[in-house]
Length: 175
Image (tube, rainbow, N blue to C red; front, side, top):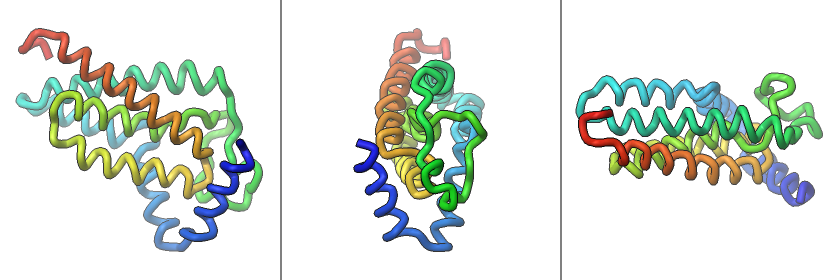
């Protein structure tokens, strides 16, 4: 499987790599470092009275993602990153010891998408666009295997759905 995944990553490098995308996708990927862009979105939604349930759902999804992805799965699976095979390629390098599976950037991004969609917020559509580009950036930047990104999408969908369901279960006015 690793051979097939390397072929995908190398194909992306061969057909898409250019200075403009290097800059743009590095910037977009950095927006997801530590989940900052999504934490800011959750905070804004929590401040806006009419969007508090959405903000709470996003917050719950991000907390669930943090536990599932960063505290449980990454250390348990402890998969190495693809750039270790081609150290000349990456434009950004994650901290040493940060495991690859699942993609945390992708998981957090899709957690937000599914939490927003589950709450009926129209913001899920622009969030999906950013999540998709962020997921692709992780492949483009050679910091994740395709299965890491797929795992991140699936994990994000599960915890995003769970975050929305948690808010749905609360009586109105409690979040």
